[in-house]
Structure formats: structure tokens, C-alpha cells
Length: 133
Length: 236
Length: 248
Image (cartoon, rainbow over all chains, first blue to last red; front, side, top):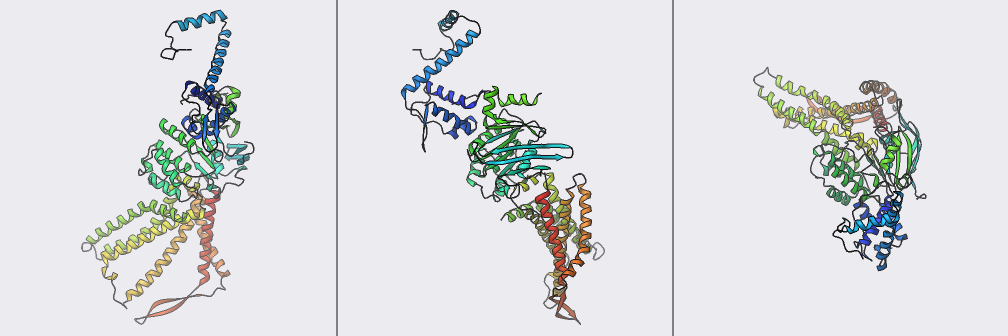
């Protein structure tokens, strides 16, 4: 897990978001054991208490569960990936639409721009990536 | 958090050198289990504050207490202090320095010292005077982190050090830090490298506290990094 | 344990300075020995013996070096960060200087005897050499104690001088004079307080009409007690200065 923080935003939330991304990308499977808090703190060079807060938040969001004496594991829930994916997509979408609206683009303009961008078969984001369902 | 034990307490702490007020009526508490960033430009009082906390310097007025006591030779058993300057005996080798210091502290862990020496890649038999600045800084760190001590005071552990040493030092600090039990105060005038490890930060200027808060809280509230906060605080 | 560590460190720190003198001594004696038949008789011997005088000067320089070096090399931070009492720190320094002082004197003596008076090293029994050796031993002991007292005063003065940050050299000298003067004035006074102590009988060798005899001499205990107390007092003051007043 590599993370270049935006130090202008709370770090613990960025850790949570990155773990979410790892789960969605399949880098962290359901039931898989996560790095210990200390290991993560050391690899990220972040205060262990900040990592602790991130882990607590992830537990609150039901992304992970901690088994005493054994460690922290990704929730063994196959639906989790799907749920997260949808959540993150929704967030990104809303944020995109908000930004486009603030720039003054109408709905139809937005739709056109998106299909053009995708239709130019080989837009960077999808080159070499999996086909979207 | 608020129930955590108070480790360091300062009441109207002042230190004057002639007409210069290195510390000017400081009031604060440092709680157990925190990594505190003591920030400020050179001359703001960071070094004097750290020295006052471990008894190297005596207050002109006011007081500072450690674990409820005034700094004395017995509190030295509970504090590991790393001065910014080169304070090691140049004629000793790295291993001899470690050997020398270890005999004075009951809380010394020889295995940890050995592991840190390896992790930080310090050549054991080289004399201190032949070590580069970065290696000397790493050796100083071993002396502090090989002890199971409740309070660690690091004065500019990263200044003037090469980048690879800096990363190693930060990793070692985070790796050895005993969450909840150990308190670390790290002073620096370069925030970039280290801001992600601070839980709390305290900005000093001319011997006074200008701002003191939790790092994540500042980020959330002001939407900027601690580095940016620095500019806001000092460039007025 | 802590004291031993500090003592070893101090010994090592001064080793360079001490070995320098040993080297000079050896070289000097070897050189002078070659001049035995070339210079006026007894001159080379006298020159070698005169070198003894250098040693107390060395002790003073060594102590000053030992203390000053901590500040100029910033290693005073190291000492002050260790959980040891001030008395242990200065005892280690004093003892190290004295230890090397004894070593250097012994070396000087042996080197001198080897080069110029080898017969003295193996005297016949009953000869006046025993008497001489005995008195030389007594003198040496007194010399050592005197040196120790002097060094304690010096150490105290150096530390006191640091309290005046701008003129610490002058302040140290001033303190030295005042301390020495105080020592002289206070010794008789304190001695009187202990006048009730019985004298200490000591068996010594003496010479009566060419015959070696053992006599008993009574020493004034009070004087020794007074000096010892004053010495301890200055040592305690120096310890306090290290613990309470020294700042970096």
C-alpha cells in the first residue's frame, strides 16, 4: 500500500480511503489479514495513533474487524467489494457532476463530453484496464 | 485522551539570558502517549524548552515539572534527551559509545540497541569523529530509543541530515514508539518530513506559545497542512 | 559501577596526555644517559631528576584539560544527561588525574634509577637504603595527598569560575586564591575544635648513632582532621556546583 498523503487533509481519513480502494481493486481480499497498526505506521511514516484512529473508523464503517490477539482482518463479506465499489463510484460521480455544474456545463453537455471521451477508444483511463460491465 | 496522565507541566516558565527572553511565561501540559511536534524558527526557544525539561538549564522564574517532580538527577532515569549538537566522545567508537551509555541506565535494552544499530546501518567499530553527520545522528538516536523510557526529547534530530538518514530515523522513531505509554517531543524547524508523525503540535515564537493543537484537527479545520500552518503563523 | 565506567572513561581520555609525558621521559633519560661521560659529572642525573618537577605541572594541566574539554567538545551534554550525582563525576576526574600522576611519578622514578642509579634498586639488607626508601615513601604519600587537595581546590575554582560567564578564567583564578587563603586560615581554627583528639602514634624508622632503630612519633591528629574536613568540604561544594548550578 503506497500512499502519498495530501497533508492538507486529515491523514486518518486518507488511510481509510486508500484501504477502501485496495479492497475494491482486489488487493485486499475478504477475510484477509491487514498489516498490524505498527507495521502500517512504520511503512507510511505516520503516527501510530493516527493509524489507530483509521482502524477504528474502518471498524465503525464495518470494513474490517479486529480479533483480539490475532490482528485486524478485512470483513469476510463478498458483498463488501460490490458495496464499496458502488459507494465510491457514487461519491466520485457526484463530485464530478458538482464540479462540472459549477463550471457552468449543462447536463447534455456533460453527457456528450463523457461519451466522446470514452468513444475516443483509447482514453487513458481505460487503456489496458478491464472492460467495464 | 483527557484522562491520560500529565507527563510534563509548565507554569509561567521563563528563562532569561540577560535581556533575551528565551522562554517567556510558558504554560502547558504534555500528556502521556503523545508524539508532540515542537515547532518554530531558530531562536524561538525550542532548544531552551527541551533543556529546561531535562534539567540542563534552570528556569529564571516559573517552573517545569516532569512526572510531578522538578528535573534532577533522578528524573534523568526517566528521560532520554538528544541534543542537536555533537555531544559524543569523538575518540570512542560507535560500539564503545553504546557500551558506555548502556551501563548507566537500568532501562537499557541491549537487543534493541543491537537491532537498531543494524537497522540504521551504523558501523560499530568506526570512531565517532570519523562518522558522517547522518551516521552520528543515527547513533544518537540509538542511545535514546534503546531505552524503555517514558519521555523522549529529540532536538532537531533531522536537521542537516541526508535524506536517506532522515527517512531511516523517522521509521526508527515510529517503529520503536510505544503507543500510549511513551511520550515523544520532537523539535524541528522543518516540518515537511515529520509532520505526519505528530499527533499534537506546539508552535513557539520568541519564547511564547503561539498555537497548540492536535495536528489532524488543524488539518480538518484549516484545510491545510502543518507546513502551511507554519507560514500562517510566522509570516505575518 | 557507574563510577567505574566514568573513571575508565576519564583514564582513557587522559591517556594521550600521559603517554606523551612517558614518551618524553624515556627519550630524555636515554638521551641524558648518553651524556653521562660527556657533560660535567652529575649534570645529566640532575637534569633527569629535575624533570620530576614537571609532573605536578602536568597534573594541573591534565585537570584543566579534562574539565575544559567537556565544554569545548560539548561532551558536557553527555555527562549531564547521565543519571549520576555530581560527586561521582568529579571524583572520577580527580581520581583519574591522580592515578596517572602516580603512574607517571613511578615511571619517572624507575626510569631515573634504571639509567643512573641501578644499584639503588637492589640494596643490601640493613643498609641505610631502607631508611631512605621508607622516608621517600612517606614523603610520596604526603605529596600525593597534598596534590589531591590542591586538585580539589582547583576543580572547585574552575567550576565556580563558570558561574561568571564572561570572565570565567579570571573568576577561576580569583576563587583559587580565596579558597587557598580560606584553607590556610580555617585549618588552625578547625584544628583547635578537634584538639581533644588524642595524637596518632606512628612507628617510624630512624637513625641513631649509625644504628637503625624503630621509634614512635606522635602526630597531631587534629591538623589532619581539619585539612581532611576542609578538603571534603570543597569537594562537596564542587559536587553541588555540578548538580545545581552548571548549565549548558
